[in-house]
Amino acid sequence: MFEQIVFYCFAGMLIFAGSMVITVRNPVHAALFLVLAFFSSAGLWLLLEAEFLAIALVLVYVGAVMVLFLFVVMMLDINLAALREGFARYFPVAALVAIVMMVAVGTVVGRANFGLDKVAAPTPRPSDYGNTTELGRALYGEYIWPFEIAAVVLLVAIIAAIALTLRTTRQTKAPKPERQVLVRREDRVRLVKVDAERQS
Amino acid sequence: MNIVPMLEAQLGFLPDPVVTTLIIVLKILCIVIPIMGCVAYLTFAERKIIGYIQVRIGPNRVGPRGWLQPIADALKLLTKEVVIPSGANRFLFLLAPILALGPALAAWAVVPFGSEMVLADINAGLLYILALTSLGVYGIIVAGWASNSKYAFLGAMRSAAQIVSYEIAMGFALVGVLVAAGSLNLGEIVEAQRGGLSIFSWFWLPLLPLFVIYFISGVAETNRAPFDVSEGESEIVAGFHVEYAGMAFALFFLAEYANMILISGLSAVLFLGGWLSPLPFLSGIPVVGLLFLDGIHWFVFKTLIFLFFFLWFRATFPRYRYDQIMRLGWKVFLPITIVWIVVVSAMVVWQVPPWFDGA
Image 1 (cartoon, rainbow over the protein chains, first blue to last red):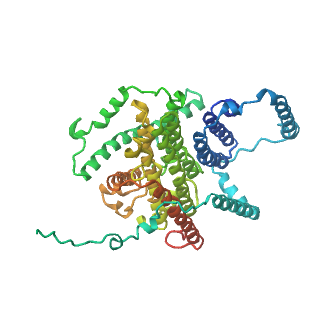
Image 2 (cartoon, chains in turn blue, purple):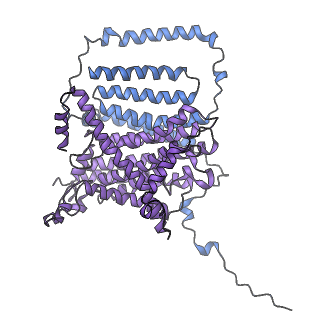
Image 3 (cartoon, each protein chain N blue to C red):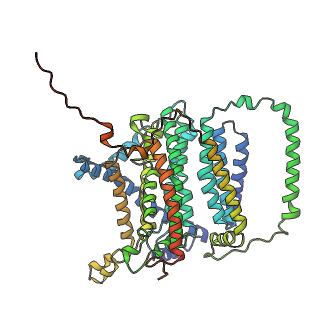
């Protein structure tokens, strides 16, 4: 009973936030609604006793990805009027695509495959059961090779992305602290003894 | 914690979920109210300590030797008007202080004060802490954007970039702790530090680089001096909270100090053995010996040491330049943490005594 109330609260919040993301006019508001959507889905995962996934979702998506997202959205000057141009013209096509997508998704994850009679309710685990350990065992034991390959692919992507942004021009005036700290007084300052002007 | 079953018996006439909720709310109050008091007196301690460091007296007018100063400050801020700038986004402007304070308080749910004194004894405690401390940045960014002011916006941008950068070093330092302890539960992390050498079996010694990096990253995360470029007075007035007044401003203040206490408490739990006593062999002494048993007073004492460091830093170091902050975080801390995680893993695998031999 209590769990159902919590579920419907989070589910309602998720649907509300999700629809606000695509309908609000202000892009910053949209990004913040996306944050709310992530939070609600994290709450739903917690109800399924998937605490690692729930916290990782908040940690990675809310704590890092959306911060950078907001960062960019705030600095961009998005012209919404231009984005909304031709809304009426493209609406029929968009609606058609949307309906086809909905039907496709509905048939795949619908009652035929994932109905309540097809999937048993997850058995409640004892309170000392942590799925962090279980996930770790699976990732680093059973699936170690796929995991390592994915890690290498990700590493290559990171290095490539950083290499693309490295554009050192000759105009760079940025000082190098590791060289700054090596500066000695003798290299910079020359004390000159100047005799006082002689009165003639 | 014998009070809990007693309370449950007293409230027996209510339905079970209501009793549970009531007891949780009471426990939350038992944590939040002392923290608020600590925040108030931390501001007083800060002004006094920095005053003495700079050979001044500090506040000494309100009450005996200035002891009522924080209460006077709070009353003043409560009675002031909350000014909302005309170009500001009203809803987000008022939401931002709440977003800043909420995570700072919510993270205390998993902090163990004593061997049984913890609100939520969850398995993924360390992850929860990481997730919640990464949320504090929202209050700052939203405040900077909703104020519709250049200074506030610049402060928010600086602080967002800084917090995101230092979070990575902080996360890696925590990975080292979890490798050493073999658990994500904060209580078990403290228990893993128990050993025959008392103070030398705590994690600060085998994880010394991570300990230093964790605390410095914590200072950077809370936007405290010397990393307080987000409110650099000389360049951008007061940074992200320049447009705030009255209680809305006070909430940002509360959040900053609550975060300081949180970082100090976490450093004590993760690296200095939390509630463990540094001198357990002295507990045989009559009367005074009770002080040398494990208990919450050691946790408080260790937290206070770290809080003093925060104030000491502020009185000692000049503000970092922005590009050097970024360099420190990405080019210095990150490589050190990664190297030390490998070292710690090797120590755990080869069961290096006296920390990791399972004794």
